[in-house]
Image 1 (cartoon, rainbow, N blue to C red):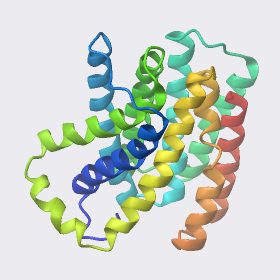
Image 2 (cartoon, one colour):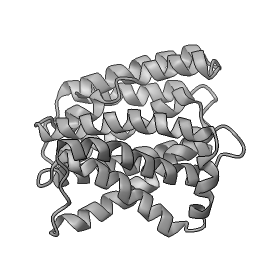
Image 3 (cartoon, rainbow, N blue to C red):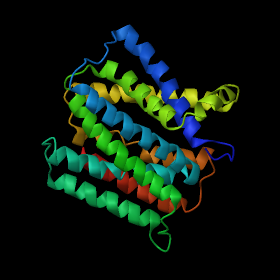
Amino acid sequence: MKKEESDPILFTIVFQFTLTVVVLLYALVMGFEFPPPSFLWPRLILSALLYAIGSLCNFYSSRHLPAGENSILTASGILITVGLGVTVLGNSFSVFKAIGVVLILISVLILYGGGRMKVNKGVLYALGVAVFYSFAVINDVVIIRSYNPISFVPVMSFLPGLVLILLFPRKAIKIKKLMNKKSLSHVIVYSIFYGISAIAYYQALYAGASISQLSPISRASIITTVILGALFLGERDHLNRKILSAVLVSGGVLLLA
């Protein structure tokens, strides 16, 4: 996404369809089921819209922000997810979770405090990821109560791509160009890791984990992202501040779990 010629909309479309292929192969082996023609479809469409916008925000934020900062900011979505889990789904809330919320807020202040609090495009896109993905996941919890999560993942990978094709039909013409570029290999690798993560995530929800537990646990990789960003992407500006912020936000999400 850092390259000038990178097109976030095109990459998002290709990513969604590549992800669909990856997770569908697994679902077919395990026993894929089409969504029942019932009340689920309005919720499926709602999640598709939320994920389509959230995925766009994700690629745009990756374009404008270092990987470590992006990871920490998008972690703020945990606060929304936990809040909705408590108010909408009836998940429990405790003193430890309250401390976790405070730690996450402090981590963001450390990252962007001290004269660095500049709300640029990257920050807004990262917050967009947090908001849209959080509402989508809450909606998903209701869906998988009535629908097999292994089948749900490929359906919910395909529908956001379809939404984006309908919104940006001219981008479909350019997909062939991307197929010949080395960039496609990055999208495939990203799709494989994302697909494994998504299947594990929704299987855990289906097995009984609450969203207020699972959402924080899934963010435990924040410190790793900051370190790998410094090692492989050269993101070493304000590294001490990033590491401290990552440690605090990781501690916060673990307390929320």
